[in-house]
Amino acid sequence: MNHYELLFVLKPTLTDEETKAQIAKIQENITAQEATIVATDDMGMRKLAYPVEKNERGHYTVVYFQAPGASIAEIERLLRINEEILKFMTVKYSNKKEIAQFSKMAEAAAKKAAATLAKEEATAIEEAPVSEEAPVAEAEASVTETPAAEAAEASTEA
Image (cartoon, rainbow, N blue to C red):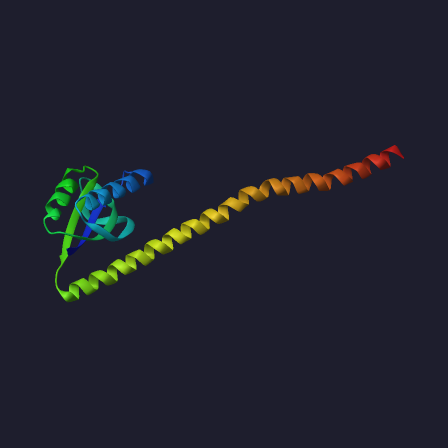
């Protein structure tokens, strides 16, 4: 099994859901070719060096994987067929120094993905209690208004 890095650029006109779906589709294509994905680095939207198909920007993603050499031709064929991909590049790591660098980059991408996932979960947790606290605050406000209203009624009766 050889070590590979696949960089691809998706069209900027895709929504977030479509972008995630395309990335998942490409990962499925890679794993279907008897490859194992080591890490994925979603670099996000970036400016292109030059316009490609009248697009100034693109969504960059890097996938680090191990695969047999014969499967690369099929993976690249599937990437050429996909109309949502502006550009792609596959790099093979062959000697020991390159493989060591591959391992470092894959670990860094995995850490970055874990940190991003943790950040998204923390944001989701912070947002959830805010929506729950609003009804509690309204209930407390109505409780504090009730004794004041009762006192006002008592003073008007007397």
